Amino acid sequence: MREASISRATRETDIRLSLNLDGSGKTELDTGVGFFDHMLDAFSRFALVDLSLRCKGDLQVDAHHTVEDCGICLGRAIREALGDRAGIRRVGSAYLPMDEALAFAAIDISGRPFLAWDADFTAPAVGTMDTQLAEEFFRAVVTNAGLTCHLRVLAGRNDHHKMEALFKAFGLALRDAAAPDPRVQGVLSTKGSLD
Image 1 (cartoon, rainbow, N blue to C red):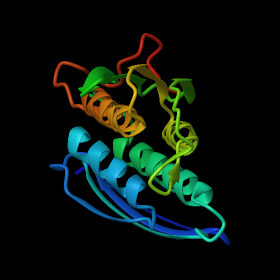
Image 2: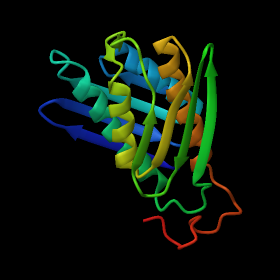
Image 3: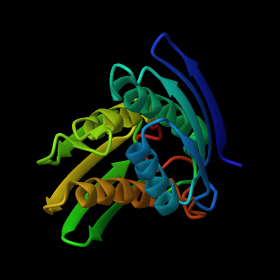
Image 4: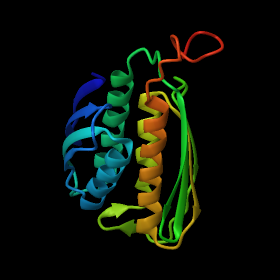
């Protein structure tokens, strides 16, 4: 089983996370930020990963530390659950339409963290989550998981739709990239290594 459990406690957040990459999209989420929970649920369902995440954060300040630190923990869990990354497809991409919005995600489980971000939002927040925090979340995930990731919003007017399309596209692309492929012997790399 490709699973991982991460615990992380700082003066800003206290997080307990468990992840199963070969799940069915089941979630138990409580970050204290309702819209963020909704986005994590959307990601998990489309990635077909089981995700349990509890976070007690300094929401009296704002949601920044909570969202970013959850991204750190999710990235670490993805990296741990992938193990040596042998026998996986390594690369995945997806377009995701949601009403008038269209998002694109491309992922390479390369071991080289990089986020290319092209997404604009018009509202300062959706629910109690600042729209700026979407980029911070994905940067934290990508950096800690060792992913090369391109995320783009290609169309849309409604910020809820645009952000949800991004999270779902990311989930689909990760599911594709992390999928085992029996034809892949060792790691899929011309140099024989993913570091």
